Image (cartoon, rainbow, N blue to C red):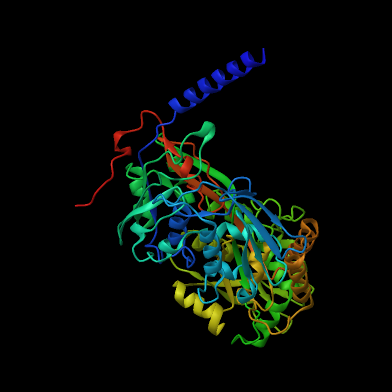
Length: 556
């Protein structure tokens, strides 16, 4: 009886797999654009998005952050354990894993990879994220398949940081100048790099992962990454069927693309990126003393926030593909988002009452401070960003309703950076905040008063205000605390203080918008990088997809 049941189950399983496999068209070449040449093929020196895209598609890690569940999952390490004090992590390495050239992954390769990554002389940007003295990091093989990494101090959320630590070998590291010869552990290997034109990746036939029912991954034979800096041309290539996906869709074009039956369009809701406006509070800023008093006033900042119609910004500047924001942490960052906070509603009457508490008053239609100075200031933002140009115009109109004159000053990006980081010759600024790290420890440089990205008053020797001093303390607590609930409580309070004090006015959170051609099957877009192709090893073309998908295109 048991034998018969087992046989029937096996038959049903085999039939199910056959049916599933019949819907999967293995092979073909997926094509999409990256916006510049990679700056490096060394997996430990990545700091630009094109290099990160190539690394994601070709490298494997011990652990990986699942882009959909936002949970850490095992990869080359089949298990791991973090010590109670948060200073050690032990990995049990998966057996029978091979590089793309057929050579086996050895424990010595893992040890070499980790030692190279943490070598201070390597100066890996991702190693800096660990926030410890790299010279004191110890990597040790402790069993036939086990490695322990020990750090000089506890690190909150330690395991998440290994999502960016590629495992490689000595041969690969010696060939970073000849990427087509590098052995890799990821789903694809670099087959050809044509600077300024394309990177062709081919299937790693020795890839260790399998799909459902043991199917070999990846399904695709190849990926072609066209190097295309011009976003309108990228969109045109997608419309003409030359490429298969768009990682970021312009909100202005979203509805137009949605009307096409040849594309699959996704609005995933809030992304991790926010648009923010802040006032210059640097004591070294070359501004009149009375303007510095305005910008240092919580009441002034709060009144400006109350005067801004965030719903209009989402609707008009982003064509309803954005959501009003209450702070720098997006609802997309599920665990760390403080759900008790709500965006400031537009309330002109309350804004004027708040200003009156500091002696501001209306003289006709013009706001003046207690000394009779007309309230007028400039707003700098970067040229060429249509959404920000629309935001600036909307804010200008909103502030006019409470008597404030806002002058918009677009600057090219280098000039803007010079003003907000070097000379501090500006009054207010409108820019985006891009979050690539879910964990608050990855945002220390933004929140700490000593941080260089503490936009409104960076690089403070001592916290200028009591509330910044409290945030400093809370951020240090969450960075050293190992209990998730206590870390969460500390960071919730950081967000609440930011909402109360309004050092930066968080306006809207942009939506994550992606698109795939109709022939691409199994799309699973995420708000996290790389949004549209994080599951590239499981993408495939539908049965009956056009023949162009896929012989490799060759430029003549």
